[in-house]
Image 1: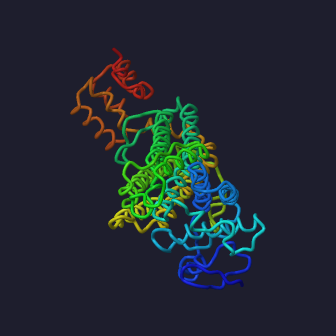
Image 2: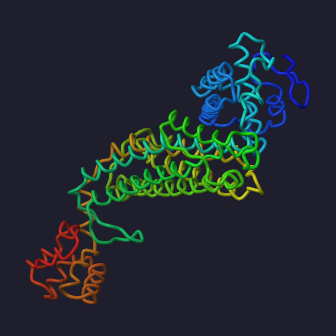
Image 3: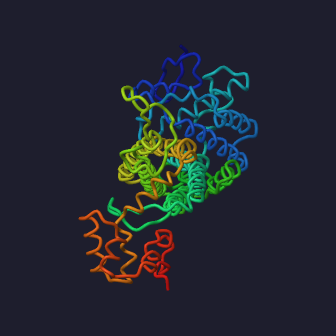
Length: 466
């Protein structure tokens, strides 16, 4: 152990730690979950510190030698180095001050090593006066939250949803000629093609990707420049704009200074909006996974219109059983993500006066939801959707047995007579065709054209034969 000092006095710190006394106090104060903040959040914190140092250099607020050292140390953090030096628990001070201080100390001590000075000397770079210049935890942590989640959405979730959408579109094309029975209220309805059904799933996935992109846009405003309460005390008026420009150049995303810094620090409505988008995406993916699971139920006592790829044995007691495990995985991911999103909504209510004090928990929940949804969607596309096959014989069998083909007879014999035909067919086991011909309601040729299920999938009045 070595002795480090902060504003509260001396404290022993592990010799191999790049952090200092304030971080060690947080480690001792918050032994709660054993989970630090997400790695992407920490890497982005390094990036924001880099941008801040460069902006301060441009503004003449930091000498070049200090700014370059800070940039080098911050770049190492942004590149994923020194992750073990950020041990503070998610459940900590609600502003994330402990994590901001953690970064300041790690960067300052790393600068000391780079400059050949002893660790803990605060030479040539001071953690507060230099690394944190023009900043406060109250504007930096919300900034990191927005940038890191925007990057996760852009780099993880959007591509995964696009992959799923493409896989579903390919299956829609493959299944374009497979006629099957439709279902509403879980009951038989009029026919459609399996391709049409899958086009709906593909559209849901495309809309989900669009929602994820809108979520990125919702995070474009950054709180940086507001410092403690939104007034910008102790920072240069051009600091925030320069930081946003540098972050944009580093990430390829567009960021801008918050239009109102009091809103940007006192409220977290943008994050709540993102949580709503994630919950909607989870709802869409649940629908897709659930339908595919049901369509593949069987193989002999279920719907069995789809043959699901066999990924692993399904039972420890029933030989040969295969379960829809990929659908089950994705549904669980979605349930979990919706719970995380609801936590963010609850966190959004906890903005009192000039600061929301649930920032670390929001960061954890949003990153966890994005990460799990992205991986879940990608794996589902690759290990389930890509291997789906249609059982055309089964689909045809169910269409031919359906009583709802009678709907196409409405223009010919009217709703009431059509209903009577359907009820008689159900009661007697006879076909619709047999009953209509027996009652001499239609001639055979017109009836056959009307009951052609392929024509029914085309909509309009194509089944009338006129």
